[in-house]
Length: 279
Length: 277
Image (cartoon, rainbow over all chains, first blue to last red):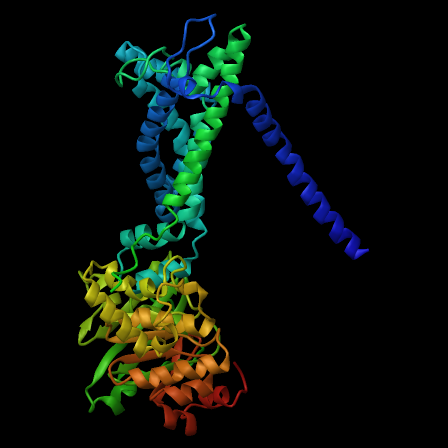
């Protein structure tokens, strides 16, 4: 009987894991089936064509997404990681609790609301849709995810590790950065990657900030295209070629997130220090 | 500030009583003067006057919860890292109070190193990086200095021969006893004057324990060692002086041989013969 329960639990677990894979696989399958035929160099690099006529590509959208995600990472990751460090290492006080609460609230904000807020604060103030407004909006979406995951990863580092470092006469900030953060590195990186994947696919805030464009990136204070926006626009067109292009763009977005994910993991796999000069 | 918790209990020895037999020798490295320590409102050390002499091993023994670990954590200012921990009294290292105003606890911790109960190598660092951590994170960048310090410290910790081919391996991949010796090497690498050991063998098997005891005997000529131990035989084997703590008070302090053979206090005798604790 006990063995039966054991088996049952194992199979239920395995079954749930497989069920959870179904949406993932079906999305990938649909994207490949409908979109793979459109993929070629021209599609990846050309500007969008005239609406209603086959041809044209998603070059500006790919470039736009890279620019946008890059700027978002530059703004959001340092702030998020530092906030996470503060909350984990110094946040056991009323201020820390308030910040943690607000951060959790922020994480649950609908992204469209963040888009509207940035529209009011930045776009209306500058009197123009802009790349920088888009990066602000995405940073605000990214910030709580990175903060939370950094805090949780650092809290998993046992106190004995902090004690060992402090007892060596290493200062608190050094201990935090070079010992605690280094120990928690893979968790922190995972959090950042999840946040990147999340913001790379955001569409709603972009409608209010970078708006979309037919052209390649020109400057930070004007409109720009991005893959989610392009997918949205293509999907709304009543032409079969456009919908196929939409699937192709979706496939590209999925692959981009995948490549960023693998790339960052490979790049951060090494140690914080090169071990020593090998004679 | 002092909570009066000791009305019914035996008065602890006064400082003069403890220090009298040692006064003539004048080679005290660390000594505490009326050291009290609290966690919140709970007083765990009461008016402790204990001395550790240079180039000798001082053992702190006593039943669980008697304040042994807290006591040595006061000697390198690690106690104050615990939230709501307090301290009063003085800890004199080489003639000056480490709790005096303006003393940077970080400089004290470089002079007074510590080895913990459970081996705690930095899990993401290699063997080499673990030993070099103290120097490197305090700014030492010179590779030959680091290489030399790493080799010397590993040799002192009797670990060099076992790991010299695997310096790039993760410190966490070593066996428990090796990890503890790695932690000792890591503490020695910053060249402290005093080494505090908080039950360093309690997580180790008898062979690994014997290695560490041998190591302690071999380094004591150059360092001052204070070791907390649960194991009375270990205290008898490794130490020159022993302090017996009970409920946060010093019951007896003296040369290890005389304390073990002719304890003055009845409580000490009962503890040593296993009647309690």
